[in-house]
Figure 1 (cartoon, chains in turn cyan, yellow):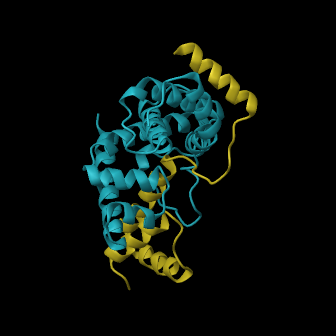
Figure 2 (cartoon, each protein chain N blue to C red):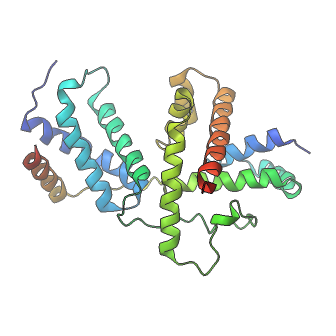
Figure 3 (cartoon, rainbow over the protein chains, first blue to last red):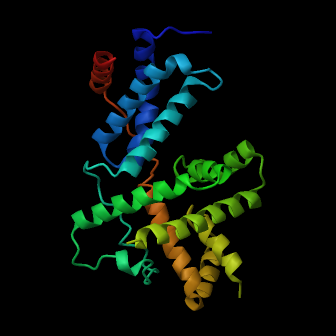
Length: 186
Length: 77
């Protein structure tokens, strides 16, 4: 079952997969144009790498894995594109204690500063994720980036639900340590 | 009164809005007296928010956008 790298492939890919890929990206980068670019880059990379695609997984899974990589890279590189600030500074009413005091802006801070801080923090976070042990990283990414159901992940990795939560917890504790270190480094 | 280990597990599940009202209240009671778990809850909230506002909102590309995309990719390969 080999397909040639023809224009037809590309047309079919775009018709068949662009909406799901775009939906996935748009829900993660909060910027329509950027999401579109990421999807476009995904198809572009896929075409280039087609010869190396071993068809062990479906084309859809493969395309998603490329897109995920691109989203993580985007977050990591803290590109200078415009992104919408996320609402980390206006937390639930029950949270009155600030986590990292030093990085928590007061009410005078404007949106731009908050956006830059989000971007830097997210960049640092992506670096920290890379440092997680492989299995932890895979499970963490599946849960936090793919937003997969816990059950699905448990089946995939053949772990119990309590194992799953232990792994998520360990990953979070590692990330916390890593971020504290990176974030306060001079 | 639950211990920190139990509280941490509730906080982890809270990332996914899986807590019952009773669990929420228990967590709140624990956190009222435990600064460490309050800190962990805060961290969890920030961590979760850094992954973007992942919603289930359906976003689609228009026909024109898809055609444009095809053209752009073809021209750059």
